[in-house]
Structure formats: structure tokens, C-alpha cells
Length: 112
Image (cartoon, rainbow, N blue to C red; front, side):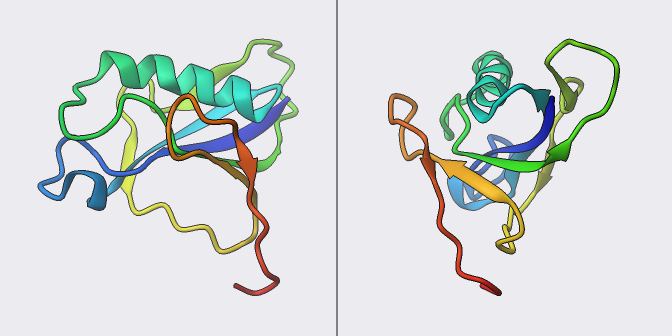
């Protein structure tokens, strides 16, 4: 099981909408698509008039060695973390522009 940092660009509460603080979750899952699916379910239930009800980015943080076999949102079920979601090219990252798009693995340059 892996840990993922799952991000929706922007937040409903930010006056800047998509350009404001991003909506962040930490998820344990078997893969990036499962992590995204768990977060998409939460985002569908949250207000989303100014931002989409689905995530844009999934970043692999590492391995979860917990004996719990269940995939789940670890941080964000009671409320996600709101901050800008920078990737310093230290994580593998999958992204999509629209919910129906295929996930693409980002190619980061060393040190960028």
C-alpha cells in the first residue's frame, strides 16, 4: 500500500477560487487511480460552485507499512488541508486537466 498526496487546484472557500489555496488530502491506496477515486468521492460531497468536484494531481509520497488492509483517506475526511500544492520534483506525480482525462505521469527535471 502506498501513501499519496492528492490535490484539487483551488478551494471553494478561497476568494481566488481555482487560483487560491489548493485542497489537499493524504490517502493510502494501492495506486494513484484508487487514491484519486477516494478523494473524488469526498469532493463531490463538498461545495463546488467555483471549483471542480474532482482532483487534479496525485503525488506518491512513499510506502505505508500499516497492517490495515483498507485503502482510505488518512488526512482530509474531517476537512482537507488548504495550502498551495507545490511539487519540488521529489515525488512521482500524475495529473489530469479534466475528470474524464487519462492520468499522465509528469516528467520532472532534476532539481526543478
